Image 1 (tube, rainbow, N blue to C red):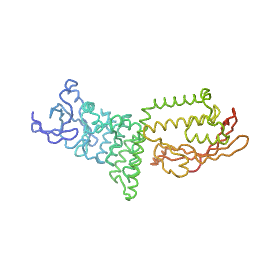
Image 2: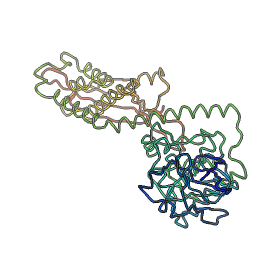
Image 3: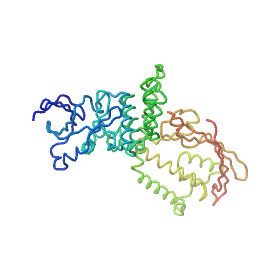
Image 4: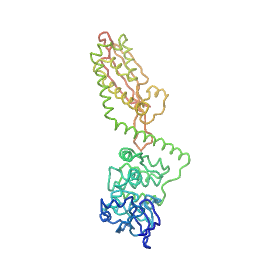
Length: 459
C-alpha cells in the first residue's frame, strides 16, 4: 500500500492513501505490539471531537505502517497537535470548555498529553482515542514524558483540579515562553512539582493583570480549581489583553527580582533534597554529638582534665560562657555550667553546629552570619537559608551576691509569605536579659542558675 505523507507534527500525520486524505495518530509503536495488545482494544474507544460544545466521535478503524512505525488514520481535519500549535487565548478558552465537558460527561480522559490533543484550524478540540493514547504514554521515554506529559499533570491530583493546573501551566507558557516547573530528570521534575513553589507569574510577565496572575498562581499551588472562573478570566483576557504597559525601569527591576527569586527557589529545593536524602545521616551525627556531649559531662571527663574555667573570676566565667555560645563551643559552655543548667542553650548550639557542618560539606559554606557583624552593619544582606548566629552588644552588670545581669541581642531570620512577597528573609531582633547566679564549686566559679526574659525589639 502506497502511503503518502502530506505533513507531520508531534503526534499526528496527514496522509494520502488511494487518493483519500486522512488525519492519522502518529506513534513510536511498531508491529511488535501485536504480540502485547490487540489493535481493536486500542481503538475500542473513539476519539472525542468537541466543536461548539457538541461532542462527536472521531473513529480510527485500522493501523498502517509507515517508516517502520504504526499510524492510526481517521477522518481528515486540518490543524496541529497541542505540542506544536501556536497557543493563543482562544485555544485556551476552547480547552477549558472541553475540560468542563469531559468532567460533566465523565469522558475517559485522565490528563493532558500534548501530542494527543489536536487543535483544529477553527480552534476546536479533538482528543485522540483514549486507549491508544494511554498505551502510547506508557511507551514514552523519560525525556518525552518531561516534554509532553509531566509538566502539565501534577503527580498528586486528578479530575477538575488537574485540568485547572494544566490550564495554568499552558497560560504560564503562553505568557512567558517557559514552563513553571522544569527538572534535570523525570523524578526531579515530579519532586519539584510536589514540594516547590512555581516562580510568581507576575515576575515572569511584568505588567500582567492581577486577576490573571492570581488565578494562575493559585491554580499552580493547587488552591484553585474553578473552571468557570477560568472561562471568565480567559474571556476578559481575550477582550482586554493580558498585560498592561509599564515603564522600562520598572520592567527591568521586576526581571532582576525574578532572577534572584528563581535562584532562591532552586537553592531551597536543592537544600530540601539534600536534607531529605541525608536525614538519617544527619540524625546519626546529632545522636553521636549528643552522646559525646553527655560523655563530656560525666565523671571520666572530669577526672581526665579540669574545666577550662579553673582560676577564672566569676565575671570572667560569665563572659566566657557567652563567648563560647557565639563560638558554638559546647564543651566550653558546659564547663561554665552546673549540670542541668542551660540545657536549651546547649541543645540549640549543638543542632546549629551540626547543621552548619553538614551544610559546609554540601555547599562549601556554613550559612551562618555573625550577629555582631549584622548589628554593626558590616553585613546588610542575607542569602536564602542563611542564619544570624551568636549574640551582639553583650553588656554584663554585677548585681551583687555573685549575681550578674547579661543583656544582648539575637537576630532571627523569618520566611515572609504574606501577599506573596518576593522578600524571602527578614531578620527579627530579640533583646535578651539573663540573670545568672554563680557559686564556687570545688573552688571553681560555676553558673548554678540562669533566668531569662526576652522581648522583640525594633530593627
